[in-house]
Image 1 (cartoon, rainbow, N blue to C red):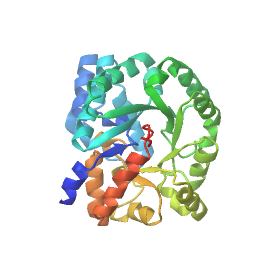
Image 2 (image 1 turned 90 degrees about the horizontal axis):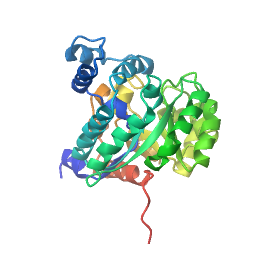
Image 3 (image 1 turned 90 degrees about the vertical axis):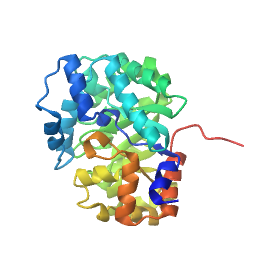
Image 4 (image 1 turned 135 degrees about the vertical axis):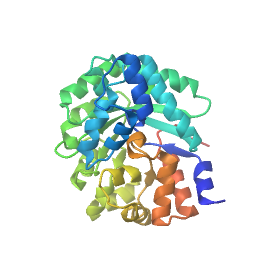
Length: 320
């Protein structure tokens, strides 16, 4: 089978996907119109032109502007449905979807509106794709805000499988959120965290030891610390790598320089994911294709990446 066909056919899990990052410009304008939200961009072409980022912060600035159009349960349902359609087409059988409730509740959108919209779309697609939600805390906000968000989420814990940590990494070490992660784990939630994208390897150590993270989102800078690499290999801690995101946010200057193949060769447990595909121009299938072509990955490596994603998911594992 041709590599492109194999990528489409292989069952895979998406473990690093921000649902707000799937807001395509067309949907952004449609929602802005129906909700009476004035955008900073006169047309879709201007939005696409603005999708040229110099670093993580320049991306986040437009990301939060885009999220401001999301107001109603219908908006959140439409957003989730749009992503799930694309994921299914790319062979995704399991999606563990990040969402940022603080980005909405801080604008006056009730937590229930957000999660009820997601729930409606997830039900509509339940016979085609298995999904769960991961509640992410915004690390540029104080831990008190995260603690309040976790309390607000308590009535909805049957729909949430884990907590995560995202937003501006540099200057916001994982240790700042040790209390909220401890509380979430005590409530039965799993834990993941963004670390080692723009932040140093020390942030990966912090995510593991201070937060109890079971997966590291990104983690590419872990390669700078041989002791950390040894631990990640020995414990087979999953790293949810996002090649196109790394390219667009200047973590690498060319996909041919991406460390994914080296990470595989070192025995690291890596998977391929799309992060914020509407902003970075590639959903999960194209992330596989682009990095496979750039690094010369073969069938065995592509299959291993897909298998890693399934095995690293929080879906109940079959026994017997």
